[in-house]
Each structure stands twice: as structure tokens, then as C-alpha cells.
Image 1 (cartoon, rainbow, N blue to C red):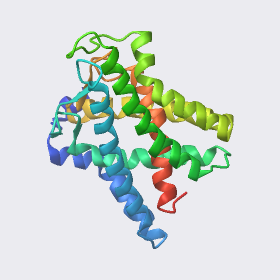
Image 2 (cartoon, helix red, strand yellow):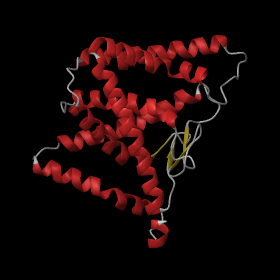
Image 3 (tube, rainbow, N blue to C red):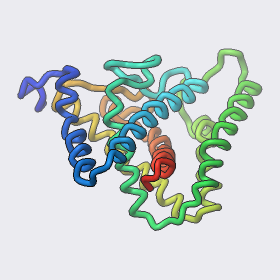
Image 4 (cartoon, one colour):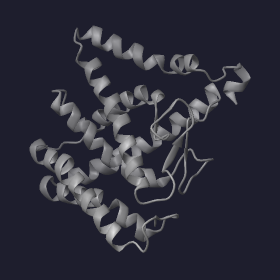
Length: 240
């Protein structure tokens, strides 16, 4: 492994050295355009990402017996996330933004806000109430994944994306798919790079894991859906 050959062992310092190129690039860009807006957007993306993945983990464990992923280093809140994730999510938010700007869609953000920030949590509440009503015992949870329980779990996201596609056209679905493909690929490559360069595996996926838990296809929908949250954060702050 590259990290072992160079003796570039894991430490918080080495981790931030590895990611410093993104921070330097951010400040260079902000200086070039003489604006603090890129830094503000980056911080908003960083916080949004950490909060979002924590919520997704909490939501998953309401229905399944094990965590969707487990962080291994500098963990927060039941290992749902890590303090090391702020920079990666800040960068990830910008990646989502770049993807969205390549798609020619006339967004009606008022209706998107209603779908994503109002209807989505309402659907999750109903989903949990129905699950509790029909589950065979008080402590019952799914302990493996199959098409049926995945459909039940992902249903709020599928409904939101379907409604958004009806309201805004097929571009929404195309964007959803592009978000998912790029984000899952980027996350996998980032995880592999961290393990190779600084000799540390930062997280492990639990369900349908590949490559020693670096990747699971089940994360695709989460990453695809999350892109719209970052997009709306950027629009709210006047950056889109």
C-alpha cells in the first residue's frame, strides 16, 4: 500500500494534510473573486452533509437491526458520522452543484422546498407509524435486505422523486441518476484513497458490502436524493 510504503500513517494531522488541497483551492478561489461567498457555501455544505448522513443513519436504524454504515475514527452520535467528514461534505456539495449546472432544468424551488422539506418528513412519520402498526412484535426490525423491505424503506424518497419528476419533467430523474452515479463513485474513490495514502479505513458499510465494506449499492439512492438538498441549500444562499 502507498501509505505503508511512505510510512504516512494515519493521524488527524496527516488526514488534514491530505485534504488541504481542497481548502487551499477554496481560499484561492474566494480571493480571486474577492468574495466570502464560496467559503460560506462550503461551510453550509459541510454542516448539511454531516447532519444529513446522521439523519439517514438514524432513519435506517428505525427499520433495520444494524447501522447502515459505521464510522471508525473520531466518531459522533453512535458512530453515525465523524468530525472528519466536514471537509469531504463541503467538497461533495460543490460536486453536486457542478453536476446540477450541467443540466438544463428550470427549477421551481418553491415546490421543491415543499416536497423535500415538508412532504418528505411527513412521509417518514407515516412510514414509521404504519411499520409500527403492522410489525409482528414490539422490538421487530429487519435484519437482512430484500426487494420488499428495501422498497418499503425507500418509498418516501421514491414518491418525492416521482412527484418532482411529474412537476418538473424528466430532467429531475436524469439529475437524480447523475447525482447518484457521481457521488457513489466519488465516495468510494475517496475511501480507497484514504486507506491507501494514510493507511486508515474511515467507514464500513454493513448491508450488501463490497470491497471490505468500502461500498454498497444501497447507498446510491441516498446520494442521489441528497444532491437535491445541497442544491436547495445553494439556492437559498444565492449561489445557484
